Image (cartoon, helix red, strand yellow):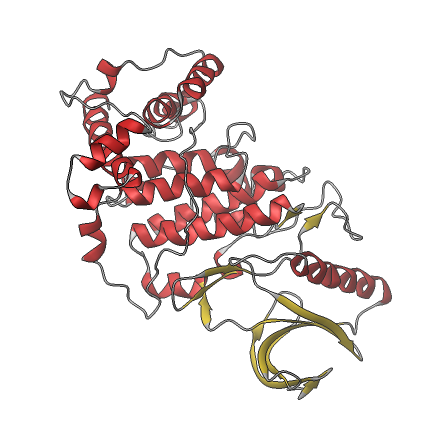
Length: 407
């Protein structure tokens, strides 16, 4: 093991990365622990130039970003045939390792982690950076439940000196979007799809698209519609089925258009979960995940795939279907949004009677109505946000009853 990289004193080896070794080191100038990612440049000239250029691209991409959910880059340098990036040393574990230990995390903890990653991606996207390799091994979870995105090594930037050409497939097959599989140009919605795959896997313990080899996985990604997460894990609420479906929509126009809307819907869903269920579940490891998101949230309307495709595959029409999308939108989105969605799908907006046909007289309203409900109930619901929490619970009850009758 090498002992010095530039001014950094190497302490130990942390692991093998995609391009080289990752070390734990110390910066003697400010007495700070850092993680150093390296790349060995002892390659053929053409290969060396490409790898070195991509390596520095990672430093440039991540170095431009300053966000609580993205790893911080401190420095970049080169020693002989080794180029390196010095970055924030995180006292935590890869999400991949956490999932391997815990198998299935509680639903609320899954939502917290994915929502944090979504907010980090939203910030990167707003700065013109697409990660292109979102997966559990590229997310670190710190002991307080804080999640950080790592490894922007294959990120595409608008001003990148190294551009990934159309037709060149990069990424991890199990988490790649349909457009990545086909070698098409990608944008922020590709990261959203990959994050949707992560969400599905964390909720169910299995990937939505599986196969014996890379070609089989890619075929599934392009052609298969997975069963709803709640079919595999009974703790998954119906609203989360809709959110996953929208993130995994094969059509770019049907998918979440930005990661912030994805995070907003996840937080709204998290607020609607019964608190008693979460308190009875103890995490397997020391990584007790707490909410690290304190941004204001508004629930955006959901969109899904054509229900005929789902029916043809013999899957639940409550997952990835236009009918489900309309029901969710009618309960959560604004009047204008629901009207626009109704025109797009060429479907009538569900009436109040249809939503409440199980006999539960519930009507979801926003603003002042939510505040009024919260003030007239228990002290736990004395804020506007508390009102939305109560409404969301009632709405989920209605969805469950309606789904039982219809499906």
